[in-house]
Image (tube, rainbow, N blue to C red):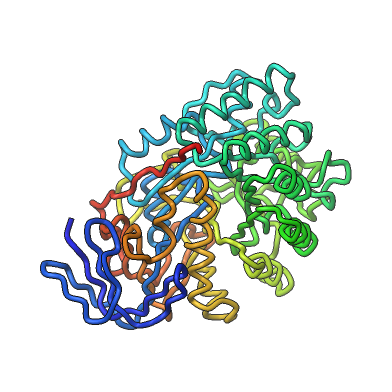
Length: 489
């Protein structure tokens, strides 16, 4: 592996707080030196004057699990993309498959609560592929008998022993299950020293009959069991009630709970159209109508309730976009920015795979073939966050931006995986996962109608010391990504 010397950039390290002009020497997949006028015989020298050099972004919430999707994320500054909210089962197969296919950036998986429940309650055989059609299957969303509970808890425990990076809990897709079952999962994770990553169930403002407010449930678990609880995409599960939800999280933190939170800068989410919360009778509680939903594969907007019921019945796994906030409305934009500005809020994409008209979801071709569709957050979450919060709003310094995009997400995994100690910062000996950004050009280009346009302004991206993005474009034969696994204490 050739050494690389990044010459004369503005180096920003959230690990030490350093922000200044320096060279960065990468050798053997590690950061070898940071200083002025560094020399290393045989190193490839890249002039990065006028650019920002920092640790690559760690995305805690990515569902792409593909070369095509990861290349879009690499162009957005991501060096590690993790499937943690949903997780996969079995993780051993998920890691083996990704390594065999090759990945441009690092990857990792949590144990899937939903797939473990589906295996026990509805007899679905897990194949390390979370099909969106599963989300509409009512069998696994039911309460468990004591025997069933022991079975799927045991499955999750064995997955943690096999290297899962925690437990992903899609509680929002089974919103009526007994809260005691949720507590059992959180207790298991805390005992094992593993974090949980939760799509919370409905909050009280959306469903006054909910067994428990979703954010309150997550906060209580963190307080009662002392584990690491991560609240996924607080923007989309809270919508216009973000202030109340963030207040609940803040009180839990003040009380000593270890609860982290993430957000992405878009007013629309994406999921399978068969999800429980997209049932026609559920839409009004979020001020939504059927026309708030767009089918990803075709760009078709749902016309009315009859159309929605038809698609849910005939193709429940169809990926869709759900418009829950109006990004053109200043008040709604302020809500999105509030979720990003919340103290220690982490940027995470909830990236979705790219789908082409023939049903395929991956390719080694670059640029990507025409006709692919996804949510724009797959390609643009981090660049959009930086453009908005650093350049336009001045809400974050560059040091703070790297803290939220690199340092804080890596620290969420510290307890479960020693490998993350070397990520999210620029310490000597740290992993050479680096991003070089043009601060004046960094921006997203993906839109809801043209969702696979890569971000601009990521000039170079190194993963384990190998260039994956060079001069603003993908290096097509670079597959240095490796699996990051948990290790039970």
